[in-house]
Length: 376
Ligand SMILES: Cc1ncc(COP(=O)(O)O)c(C=O)c1O
Image (cartoon, rainbow, N blue to C red; front, top):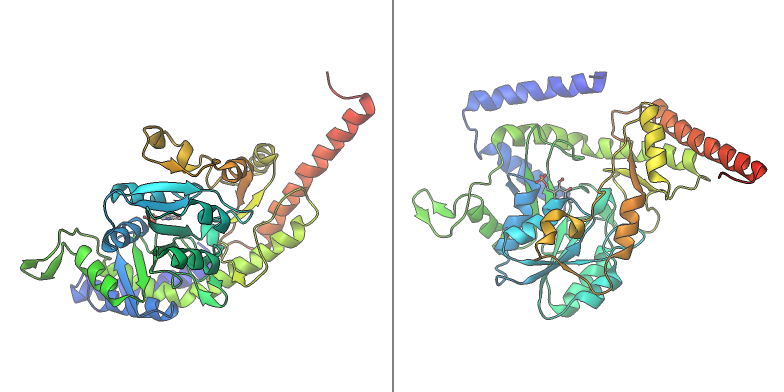
């Protein structure tokens, strides 16, 4: 653990002790405080804390009261939870293709949306906002609610506004690996709709309107006070952590410029919070093996798009006409490089140097082939 990690731990431990002393482990002041702060940060009226990002999506989909079998349009290059939530709520996922920014392609959405569409779920993948302004306009034209899957994008903005507030609800994961992570599972929904917020509060707590009155069939999906207390400490650090991610990403961008690698999207009025620093290159597997040999751990988010997963083989997952060629191509080219706020500039530079070395070697080998007339 580095010095900053130790400082954070020394801030967290007393908070943990105070929850223990209070004896309030479910709900209470820490959860209320977290919800209030999170809502303010997102410039919305309500935040409802739940047990996970998956539950945030599931309960919102249920809270919208869509007829069973309604179509939910979303994408195939996302963590399985986006589509899993749709299926588990008795809706039918219709997967559309993505654009060059790896997020939902608004034109693909426009072609796929019909009177059968019950909801659209836009995922802000890797911390880069989808084109929510355009997506929202298309949804509005068809009278379809927009839900944002913000699991990977806490703190990202589009047009100066935080993601999560563009649709009827924004769903966040607080999983430990996220930019704002609890010390266990957690999730939170933001919404401007007071009726939906009230419904979510019922659904997360067995549908209990009071101790003895069950007005809905709900479930247990509450955020623990211990988690909320730690999140209240961590929330203060979120802007600095996201900024640090941006600084490290800038080093990658500068050092990797000129190589046959597509950097993550940037520019226009959206801000990236770099949950992942994901590059694209047709020679992904060779580069990945080279980095592994140099002691650099990388990952692929996600190697198998949802419509190609074994679970989808049994049917039930619809794919837009024309298929998902961009999604499928990208799944073969994407590579997530190491990036989190605790890394140093030197570590990022080392990764970039290793990538240069890989391409230097490739061009040397290509040059030798050229001189000898190629391999047989
Ligand atoms: C895009 C996306 N949606 C939903 C989820 C689900 O969140 P959780 O793991 O908190 O259930 C995740 C978590 O990895 C995610 O990345």
